[in-house]
Structures are given as C-alpha cells and as structure tokens.
Length: 447
Ligand SMILES: [Zn+2]
Image (cartoon, rainbow, N blue to C red; front, side, top):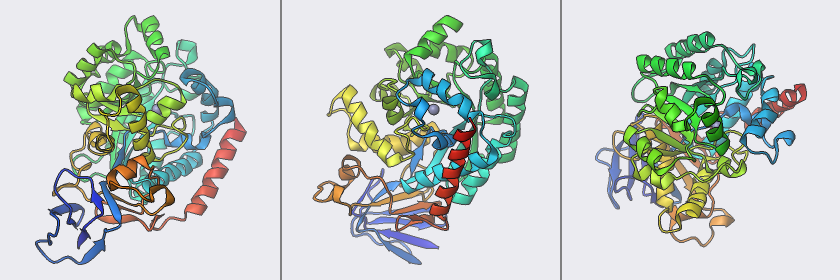
C-alpha cells in the first residue's frame, strides 16, 4: 500500500517536501519538491492542502496515572515536595482498573494532540499493582501509540529519610527482579518498535544510591535506557547536599548515570559547568514547561543545554503540568517560557517544534522517528487551521504554535491512520471518559 500525502499547506521537515510525501508500509519512502510526482503510482492520495504536517510529536515525560488526580483540591497551590506529600496517600490506593483507565485516557488525549510516541514514568506499585507495566503495554498496543514504558521505583520511605510513605515503596530485590522481568517480556529492541522499556528510579529523594547503581548495571546489561527526575527544584539541591554532601548532578555521576543512555525530567537547576558536563556526556533533558510553571519549579536552561550538546525534548509531565496531556500545547508553552529566559530572538517556533519531535526522539534513543525523511517511520500529525483562533494567520507553521493548536485532525502511526477527522479510529471516547471519571472518583474517595 502506497499513500501520497499530497501538497500540504505547510510541512515541518528536514527536507524539501512542499509536494508532500509518500508512505509505503510503515515507512516514509519519498519526499517531493513543489509540483513533484511520486516515482511510482500510489494506491491512495490524501489531499493535505488544508493541513500543516509535522512528524508525530514525541512526549518524553509523563505519569499517566496522575490523570486521575488532576486539580486535586488538597494538592492545589503547592510546590513539589508538599504537592507530592498531599498526593502519595491517594496514589497508594491505585488498582489495576484505575491504571488501565488512566493509561488509555492519557494516550487518547496525547494522540488527539498529535503525539505518536509517549514515554511514561510509572513508579507507584502498591500491593495488587505488581503488573502495572503489563497493563500499560496492553493499553498502548490497543490504541496503536508507540510507548517507552519506564519502570519506575521508590525504595526510600519517610522512615529512612526519604519523602514517600512506606505504603508506596518496594524493596530493592523486588524492584530489580520486576525490572528484568518487564524488559524480557515487553522491550522491543531496534527500529519500528511499538513498546520499549527503560528503567527509572524516581528521584534522589525517593530511592537509595544502591538501587541507582544496580539499575544502571541492569540497563547496561539489557541495552535499555535510564530515566529519572533531576534538577527540578531548589529543595532537591538542599536534600542532596544534606544527605549525599553534593549536588544532584554529582550524585548522578557518582551512581554511574551520567551517560548518553540517560534522559532526565526537568533539568532546571544546573550551573554552567554542570550544563557542559551534561553535554559532554550526551545525557538528554525532557523539558516540561507547564509543570515547571504550575509547581513554580523554575526555568529550564533549554537553549544552553542544547548548545552544549544535550538532546532536548518536551514532556507534558503528570497532572502538575497544566493538568493536561496535550503535547502540541506544551510545545507552545516551551516557546513562551523559554522566551522569558532567553528573549524573543533566540527561541522561535521552529526550535520548539524541533524539541518536540527530533529532540524528544533523541532523548528516547530513537533514530527511526521524529523527522519526515525517507527511511523514517511514517508517524505524522496533521493539523487544520480552521478554528477562530487561526483566522487571518500568516505563516502556517508559526500559526500552529503561536495561535495555540490543540487538536490534530489526522494522526498516522507506522503508516496507519489512528486519528481521522479529529476522532480516534475504533475508540468509544465517551465510554472511556465515563470509565475514567468513575476510576478517579473511586481512587480519591478511597483515600
Ligand atoms: Zn514527573
């Protein structure tokens, strides 16, 4: 099956493609200049003259389960540590039904915003939820979205000097055994993967140095990535100074994580020297602008990080991030918040689109997605500019970001349309939302 996505209104790509692109099977096989014709006949022609075409957006950091605790009253108007302490007791009641509903809802929300690959960081494993990654892998396959499921972990409870309560931590042997199990069961190495697994002890203040070291060794042995929260708040700096006698990045290096196989969520509070060290190592950063604003965490030095060689991607984060899972909105927020740090001339709409596509793909260690060029997977997000917010706009690519696109009209994953006319193919979205609302009610009600 060959499909010609013909003559888009605008296209964001590394190559000349004003004439559109040709998809064969799961891959892009041709990019055409203006007026160009495919080299061989096509079975289908999709007229993209009203669409802005992007590579499918890639989300580098999320906690799908947190869609159940958006705008949670007792957690409002708090910064990270107090926000977490207000929510841990609620999350301790998570069941398989809650997580399945949350994962499907979050993936649907992401897909409708143009996201075709999403990383999730699941680190809450109360009794009864031992098969959390299994649940998420099945949901992602059903929805046809690519995922990097990061097996999170917490083993440092408040009794041992950490932040989370004992009800949500596991012991190191359980964590490592399950990490190995889920890699063996679900990780698809190589190109074209739909499900990949990475390992993700939660943060310096919720795990021990021993679990960080042993996780790094296991990831190296299995050839999977490493992910954690780092450089998010000044409170984290103070915690590391008090407990480890060093700053968070020194701690990261000490436990063997300062490598190009690691990507970090947030990466805000780094000194110029630390930014250079991250760049030399090739460690990625998932910039989560909405979360950083809502929790008043700070301004990520994304331009300096990228200039030093750090792969910079974008993440919607969990429910702190504007309490939404809308990746194209997050791209816009990246532009706005980065201009507060760097001024208007140093961050443009093409920069933030690059972060949300190729930059995010690099964070996840994937060279098969994130750009529109022959040989890459046919993961595409197509937006129409037919709402009042776009009326009268000039440059279509700039309008997508500046006027605030929020819903894709069409989304393709691996050559298959997953969103058509703004709706997910084969999904009863109203039914899913009813189920998700009920899950949220029961989770919060039980706490
Ligand atoms: Zn997070």
